[in-house]
Image (cartoon, rainbow, N blue to C red; front, top):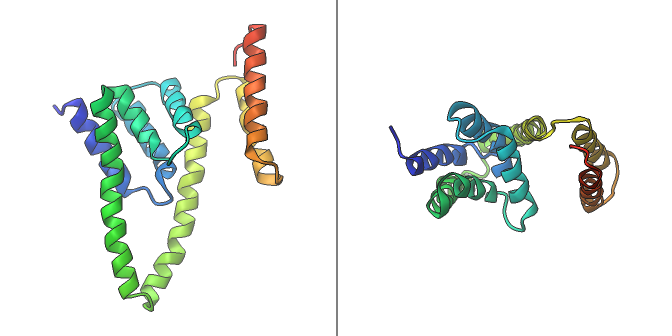
Length: 179
């Protein structure tokens, strides 16, 4: 049986290599591993850690750091962060050099065009997984749907939606209503 640090390292190293579109694109698979397969946390904890990582300034890879910290303290934070960054960075370095060398190749041009829809699909799946993990009641579903519509169909700054959701949450807490 693997130690928790070994499991964190293996899980996030594999996720790193699948992070087409960034760290957030791997959220469905991270969720499937740490919540579903390994049972290291529940949906609510996962959603809370992702929320904390997303609201903190810095790169999206902070989600791996937050999960690692929750699971194994400072050692987990370090292992998860390095495991999420190092493999994909090495692949990106090699791919960048290769693509520069073969930049006029038809295969490289097709590859570049085919990766965009893959990245978009992964990001959409991430949003769906997070909504399933976080939305537990009518109000949270309404806030998620409202934020989605505001971002998709207006030019409003997302901070307005974040502020509105926070005010609604605080008001509900003050009134004794559950989200």
